[in-house]
Length: 300
Image (tube, rainbow, N blue to C red; front, side):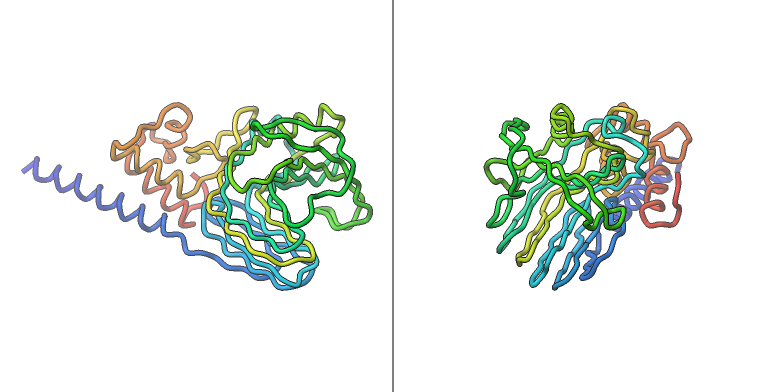
């Protein structure tokens, strides 16, 4: 009788685990057509435009598709927004992996994008562009990152829109000398190189993957996107098993894989998996994480 009960319990837990995975991983896409910010499946997103027709569909895990026409300026992006209290050194090593089907018609950028404060800086690491290579200024020099050559630029925007309203601020640019639409961008290496060239970075407000259009039309499909932030003085995020600084369906999948024995968590990932704080990593943690992802609870 005891063996039968144990088999029934094991089967029940397996069914629950599978059900949880199906519920969480089946992300329903979200489509927006006007200026909006928010959080979706573990990533911050923003669509910003000043005019024209835009559409952005969030597909989960930082992936999105977008299209634009008759715009003056529009930006579509997913990534992480921060509270302006930490430098990039304090956040730790930053990399971004991506893949895109990028089809601009006219002036457009595919880039890592963001802002810092103190000083106020808008920055771009551009991997591909449309019919015009930005920013139309004189290069301050070249750097080599991820085996590729980038031209570095610094420009000034006077009384223009920013995260602090209309004001004057600096723009930093790394522009790849040859286009690509997939790969790894070692974001921290660009930041370090800029600072060696006298281009001071401030406290981080945003790190994102952006598709930007300017007086153009086009479309793009971001088929893969992973922002990885770690090391330094980055705080521990309970439930973050893949080290991207957030808790999302990827962490749920990693925990399920660990519990069924397909893979094994270790180190910080194993510690972070104990989301219910009972010093064990088991199906109770999986259930707790599911509640968090569905919004039933807001903290662990």
